[in-house]
Image (cartoon, rainbow over all chains, first blue to last red; front, side, top):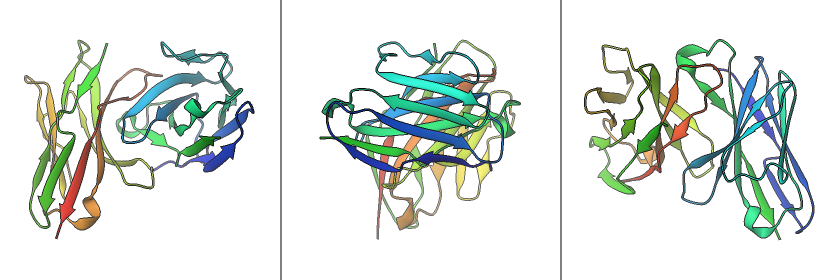
Length: 118
Length: 115
């Protein structure tokens, strides 16, 4: 299957700083990428849908000014957590869907980024 | 809106036994896909099996099979001959067959396999 990478895999930062997470589709072009957040022992919650060349669509309750998403190319989407606070500590996972839907409309997941805000 | 329900927070099974993880879904759209993912403690999402809403046959992938009952809107995962390495969190998810739609996940079931 297709490969999606995420960087960094783990980051620890101080409260008030900003953190950028990169999501790359390595062997296919992804017009749409998705960002999920997962708290310990909970499900993946969709944060936003990232569309190449246009503004991201945020889910209800997700602050777009806090979680900045940029999808500047067909292979890269970035999530920036601005002015991070301890409650932003979580596991962030991106996924990408091939333009044609791929086999069975499968989405390919990155390995995730574990963010800890001190 | 779509919704996925997994009612089993935790399941316990012994090695070599079969186990069924429950999943029900809700959507008014006739064209959709159902997925099961495994998430070990490392956090990676491992795709297990897929069922399309128009598929006539239940999906099977090795030791995994999906018991698709469309009228009941259920898509239970059956793992045969459980192995210790099957211990993980399992998520049922669905997406509409439209470009740009995300996967919506259930709350998950933690499976523990003992020897």
